[in-house]
Every structure is written in C-alpha cells, then in structure tokens.
Length: 497
Ligand code: NAD
Image (cartoon, rainbow, N blue to C red):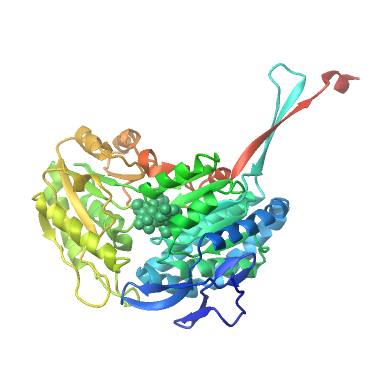
C-alpha cells in the first residue's frame, strides 16, 4: 500500500474535494485496485475508490488495536472537546457532505440535508455524553466491603454500515464507539464510500489521533469481515444491514465471543384504526413509505387499515402518491430519487410482478421510469390475500401494500405476523387505545400518529429478527462499554475510631 500525498487521491464533485483512498492509521492510502462509484440518478461513474481487501483490513485493525490504550486514557473533558471541534467542523461542511450523499446515493438533496442534520445531532449527543459517564458505589450484601462499578471501553470495534443512510449510520455508530473510548475500523458500503470519507476526514481535521478511526472501502465485504472477525484483537462488531448478513456476522462473532450489536431488516406495520385522522395518516404514510425511495429499514412495509376507513384512506394515499415528483436529487422539487442500483431496480420490478401474480390490485405506478438513472414509479397495491411469500418480506422499495382488517385485534395480529420487529406505527385519536396497541406490537419502536421517529435522544433498534442492541438514547453508549466491578474491603470500625 502506498500513502497518498495531499493533492493525489481525491475527486472533485460539484466543487467539493473528496478523498478516494483508505484511511488507515491517520493517512489516506491507495489499494492495489479501485472500484467505481455510480450516481444512480444518471448511471454514470463519479469516482474510483480504493478497493481494500483482507490485508488492508488487518492493517486497519493493527492501527485500531495500537491506538486503543492511549485513546481510552484520554481524559473525558479532552475527548469531549475533540468531539465538539469535530461537530463544529462537520457543520461547516454541510454542503459538501449533503451534496456528496445525493451524488452517490441519489437521495433528494432536501433529504440529504435532513440526514446531515440528524447525523450531526447524533454526534453532538454522544459528545455531550462523554464527560457524563458515572459508576456506582454500594455496600456489599453482607457488609464489610463495598461494590464499586465503573465502565471501560469494550475495545477495538468493527463498524459496518449500509448505503441507504450513509452519513447517519457512520455518525451514529462511530459517535457512540469513540465516545466510549473504543477505537474503530469502519467498513463503508461500496455504493456510498465518499460520504463516509468526508465524515472521517472531518474527524482527522478535528484532531482525532492516528489509529483511533480507520476507514475501509471494499467490494469484498465477506473477505474483509471474515479476516477481521477472526482476529482476537477485535472485541466488538456493530452492523447495520440485512438480517442475513447480520446472522453471518453473529456466527463469526461466536468463536471469539465478540460483543455484537445488530440493526437489521424491518417489515414495518403501519396501522390505521377507524378513529384515526385519515388526512394525517395518509400524509405520514407517504413520508414513512417513500422517503429514500422506500429504501429504509423503518419504512411502512405493510399498511394495515380498518375496513371502516379503508376506502377513504386508500383514495387519499393514492392521490398523494400520484403527486410525488420522481427525479434527480438535485432537481428542484424532487421528492423521490432513484433506486440505488440497476440490480436493485430489477429486484423492485420483480416484487411488482410477484404482487401481480397473487392478484394484488395495482392502484398506481408499477413501472420503471425510462431514462439514464434507476428510477421506479411510486407504486401502491391493495393486497387481498396476505398468505403469500411476497407479503412476508421486507420490500425495501417504493412499493406500498395496503391490507384491510375488521378489528383492532386483527390489526395487531396481522402486524405481529412477521419475523421482524423494528418499527411499527399506529394511528388513532384515542391515546389510551394507542398505548394499549403499542404495547401489543412486537417491535422495538412505535410511532404514534407519526410516520418518522429517529432522534438522538431515543433508543433506536429492533426485536426478533430486526436486531440486538440500541443506537441513540442514554444507554447506547453502554453498547461500547463494559461494567467492571471492584470489591473493596472496608473496615467499618475505622470510621468510628
Ligand atoms: P447488506 O446487508 O447487503 O449490506 C449492509 C452492509 O454490509 C454493507 O456495508 C455491505 O457491504 C456489508 N456486507 C454485505 N455482506 C457482508 C458480509 N458477508 N460480511 C460483512 N459485511 C457485509 O444490506 P443492504 O442491502 O446494503 O441494506 C439494506 C438492509 O439493511 C435492509 O435489510 C435494511 O432493512 C437494513 N437496514 C437496517 C437498518 C437498521 O437500523 N435496522 C438501517 C438501514 C438498513
């Protein structure tokens, strides 16, 4: 591997200079080969990025392991100051980062800006936590000693992020890990490496020491993770992505008993009861379903509507869907961007065919949009027979499916009839009913009369096949900390002498 000088190894995107190397031990490096990053709105190559393999991944782990001891000993206030510097720098780079995100992920610029703001807020949340970690002090049960509990970083951590929220995922994971005192190796998604590079460059410029943060881009994820996961110096893996890959990583974590946090797939039920505000429900369903072109783990995957309001909801929801403007994320007024890749767009088309094959009624959409990019029309189906495979999977697409039920009990039963349990939504004007239904839903999160709910102060995560652990909220930092208990003998008579 050669080290890049400051002028090499960068690409210029809309006037923003973005590194294209791997970031290992404080320097940007080349790899023996590169891979193309494609703008899904145009299908054109926008950058060629260093393609790391197992050897580079192990170099990154060498750096992270080497920096661990010094990083955990950085005093909390000093570490918090570093975080605050990085946060300020991040804010000053909002345009570069949001525009880069739109170029490589296709998401509309307004959505990229919202993601930027939320990511910066998550990072700030962890900055605020760094200097506020406390232990406990208690009497031992039989007396004669004290129980002191303190927290120590788990150790070098592998953070694997997906392409659908490229900045939010790295900021949320790296924020928690670094705040806790863990050094990190981040593996970006090959579709969106450049956003991660700008984030990591910001940490570098803020003064994070070499080795504390390392970034690997690769087209060989499986080779990279197998090599790093088998190394006993790795103590933690945090993954956001599909349930299948999460399951593989848990198996790789088992032999070395590596601490694991998993944010996996979802099958979000969006329940509209007969007393709901239907205008609000339809408008929130649009956001929940079509944000990021439906490529969100918390998206409304199945819209479950009481039969008494099904006609009204469907009419309003379809009307709003038909008004959505599909296009290049930089075009004024674009609300729905492209699908991430040509392959994924074929998958979306395949899902539409599967739904047609079970006699689901196509209410709008149902076709790819002609042109250079990977666009697909926002699509709505009414599903009459839900006992089919396509009704039991995460669509991860701009396809809404509407199911009709005749009671609250049936709505809850349909909502829970899935292996997943990430986000669920319930719409009703009766708060007591909303709470009772929320408690009955098998999910890690419930949006009540709202279709979007990510927040740094909230614990984000799922149950069942949707994952293990939480990101955000007061407790997320403990995913990267381990309690240590000290038993201290105390001669209680000494205080009375
Ligand atoms: P994916 O699992 O294919 O990829 C996610 C990441 O894992 C990428 O970085 C990819 O390169 C990497 N990866 C793939 N195979 C790997 C392997 N064998 N070892 C190590 N890393 C590997 O998922 P995707 O299609 O890119 O993303 C969509 C999925 O992610 C959906 O299922 C979605 O629900 C889920 N997701 C979950 C959350 C959440 O917080 N729960 C958030 C966003 C996305």
